[in-house]
Image 1: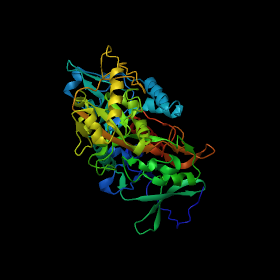
Image 2 (image 1 turned 60 degrees about the vertical axis):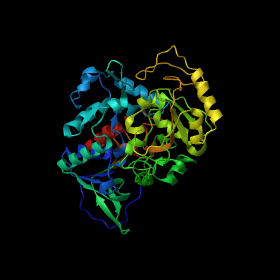
Image 3 (image 1 turned 135 degrees about the horizontal axis):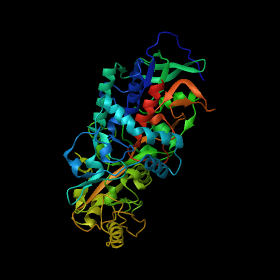
Image 4 (image 1 turned 30 degrees about the vertical axis):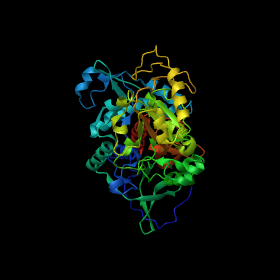
Length: 497
């Protein structure tokens, strides 16, 4: 561990310093503040760009629960509740989903804590002032009888999405007396006698100062906004990915912690990446459109590459369990671009917030051949791809987007659910590329957020939460588990710091 060689000042800036400004950082700050600790939160972004990746989310948060009656105590009232079915989602279901999507590479101890404490964590935040609701527009389709059935284990989200989430967090921090400083470029950790005793902040003029505390909580995100670290850890081609969220997550504090002797955890070679609007101007770190640049109705249609060929099973599972790996699949296609194809029958079912987005990239044509011409795909190839798909569908199986209906297209690759013939013009093509959300590699910790060194021993005074915490995700990710993990491990870290 490196010792500080900057001029010492024994005065503490606070009992606890939190580095970062997203959901996990503020949750850790709240947990420390309610214990009576003085807290200083250092956010790299200026005030007008604060909120980390959390600001750019839809606010969806995965929790275990026993159905709608178990949720009404902390979600906003809604007249639709009377005609809504929310299937129970147990802690065992949560753990099984984590194991399924990561191919068993998730840390079992961290996962068990996540599944057990996500719901109590949201209730605690609600008691402090955060607001939650059922996410009808994202997680349920209206049935013919006017009722709603939620699907995919992901049901609850913040009022106002990511923007509402972070404004609520900031209001809570102000009420609890947490000092929040924006524009703070934290570049290092200060250690003495093997313990972390503060951080180093680089001022605008290039000079540095130490800020001291009893404990430091790292919640500064991954390295997805660094082209250099993406190339180093994710490999070639990732320079083409679009940064969905904050441009400030450059891995600076990961590097600082590793230099101090922290151990690594999680999968440093994979990340959360989605299908992202390919051609809309300003399609990176867009504060106005945020999550609306995603394209998440793909299970209803098909996805083809620039050669007019399908390359994934669009209906493998609910989008909650596949969307975070499909950005990588698109990145690997020619030009790192693909096209989601729908017909006039499917078009009304697409998520309005995404597919009716201002300035959305889309091409429309009365025939598939004309559509192919517009997107630069060989018309004969696209027509054959769609015909092979259409004629291979088992039409005897009813179509139902609220369940895994088993309506199979026996083509190559197969489509396992929700296969619907594309026959009714006009036809629509939405160009998508890879949008990178956050990286899965992080720091090694115990279940309380204490950072462990390379020998597996806690580094005194140093804690981690949020996307800097490694071990939960690898290769893929169940939707809503990132914000949930920020709540659970942010609360745990702040409760000890």
